[in-house]
Length: 234
Image 1 (tube, rainbow, N blue to C red):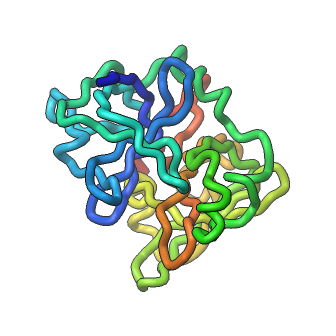
Image 2: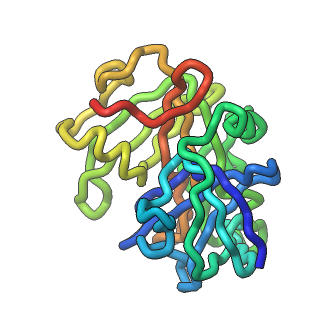
């Protein structure tokens, strides 16, 4: 069974578990570890490391897989084995982070267009070529609002090379960061960051939901000096 080393770039909410994804340290692109369950959801026992901690964004982890299981909306899916993941480095060093550069989106489109979703009906005829991306937004603000189920939700409103996006976030770290903020919109400097701070977003294409696959912000990193790091504790 293949063992692959990745830099974790998403550990986000998915149903009652998590969705994890990362870039291979050998430069060969994205992998989304999934379980054997039909929807691939990962649970704490799946991504608990040998030292008892859970895999975090920016961790370098070594994972054993059983097989690739691409979906028409998520071609990067690989099924994990039952072995513990091994922590290689925490956080990923500057040298390892250099891999990010080749995967940062340089066009306005995300997964082929500038909308916030892809209609699931078109995917059997035109499967997604990718479902994971890194973006450095030109401008961003956060909206604390409610989703269609009436639950609190964080949304990212950002510009990318002239295109405007309004995407929901499933990043639990960002949710915790904004947990004390009431409903409303917030500029980057109003939440304790600097106006010119550069952020790196991991964007993921979700599973079909009511006929659409939504584009989601699954993690947010801040540039500190020459390396990317987690948002500071507010």
